[in-house]
Length: 156
Image (tube, rainbow, N blue to C red; front, side, top):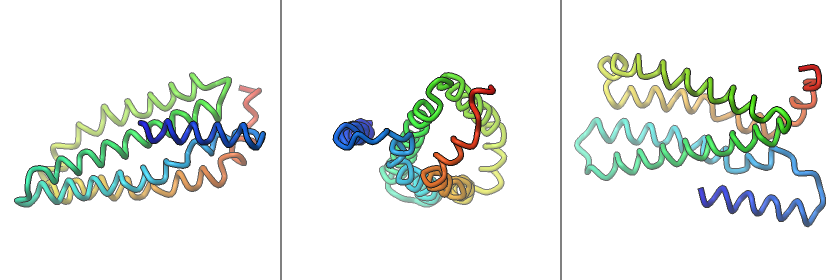
């Protein structure tokens, strides 16, 4: 969390120095790193729990997953607030609904997945799914402003 606070302070300082408008995409500078380490944590955790490895290694892998998850959550939340200023509460509510649906449905299939695939391949599947989503932050950083400007929020 401290890294994101420092990054936000740097962005605000740069904004004050240059006088340029602060674009919401600037808040996503650390998101690509978080998006990359998140699946790495899944792969590391899955395969270190599968084999006889010192207990600290899966714990470190869980910490990596947690750091990636927190980084993604914080960056997306701040981006939504900055991108949809007037409608920030609605954007965050939509994000919360989607996360809650995923949080409710994924555990229903987790036991079957781990029974069939084992810890290694089960977590690798989650890692591959997370890896497939890695391009999204890069896409939003590149085309986010264009996408935001293409929708007329006043008609909502």
